[in-house]
Image (cartoon, rainbow, N blue to C red):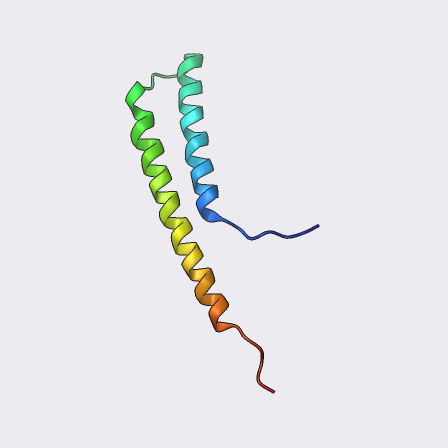
Length: 73
């Protein structure tokens, strides 16, 4: 099985969208009341945070790749 790199930005974005979906599913099921405007700051804030995490992860990976090189003999 091939391994893939972990992408925390995508994990965070997916988690925020799942939480938003669960909030509105609970509202539709009658479990609780969720105002209509809750999704806007939740989704936009979560996507902005996920973008920042993805940016920082990419910079850290590029920086780490630049350091590793062939071992001197």
